[in-house]
Image (cartoon, rainbow, N blue to C red):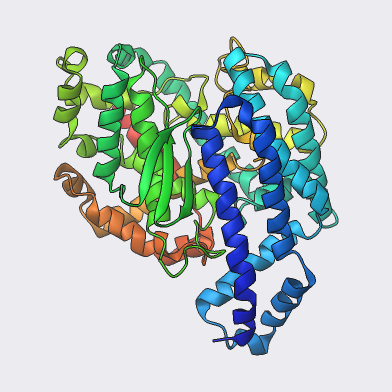
Length: 501
């Protein structure tokens, strides 16, 4: 044990407590807080953010980090402590160049900006949200500029906050592969989309019955209700205070059965990751997921590869039919499986089919690049958004609520996050290929036995928290770093079979 690390510990504990408090306010703001609370709550969040920064960004912590990075001190550290110092050093680098008053003001802004986004989306009024978005982008440009090394693009800096293994170069290569391999397949599939009928999905489904069945689904996958809760919000999300307090939200629509079901499966994938992080790591700087790309791989694995498979639904489809007999009594399991996998271009990312989903991410990636290179003006973003949807999806939003206002992320300044969804989809395929090598996945799923899959993910991915990065985990589990070929092969095999191409 290192005595110097022991000296650092109180700073880490205080920072963790302050971050937990901020997370609680975020949870409350998106679930239960009254609409008009934001302007006043923002002051509280601003003070907490200011204290968080003071706790970490000071001469004492700077000296301790420098000392602990020396070779002699590294020898005294455990692997866990070395990982904590590495993560703390990264956080320090992100924050030290930002003036404290700007950091506080930005965190206050995101609270009111989120409420402005909520109102703008409800009222289909981009002009109401635009001034807030302008301010957020100005701050993000300044913050990235403070940190950018000579010749480094601002957007590159922001991408690194969510996934250190993927910069613009790597993402351009990845997305070019998606365009060249998947877009032609999507065009083929689109010509045959009418062969699959899923009109049953858009009948009326009682909301209370939806809540009950989705809670069942969540528990079926392994969500521990003694260590987690489910609430409702305008945009589903997962938030963890620590591995014994993991919270997810869902959103229900009366005329869309699939929406909430696959949303809760997605968020449960996130939650299982957080719940399975080792107790020794939780409430430390490495007590969360390795990256947002790896995090999204877990949600996309459960939502799509497992959750849309016939094997998964074989033991529980009867329960779904019994929940909604008037709508589903004449819908066979085979019909249902085709329906939940139907590929048809649509405008809403969170409702997108698996095949076209990455196109929604490419659109956001290209727009974000344009914003931070100075090529896109905030006032003209709706036109740019609509243009790209017509180009990539072949559809044009009828209004901004189903267009540029559909996602919550920008209201919190989360530029650089969206590529994580596509990265995660690809990683999920790579991990699943390994899982299939090691166990009879379909047999387990048909038996209603999720445990072997969940335990494999716990032992191979989850328990390590952020002590490893994405490529380190992939190399340890699969024998190679990120390889998008698994994703392309998975989509081709699935949809060529589904549509008899």
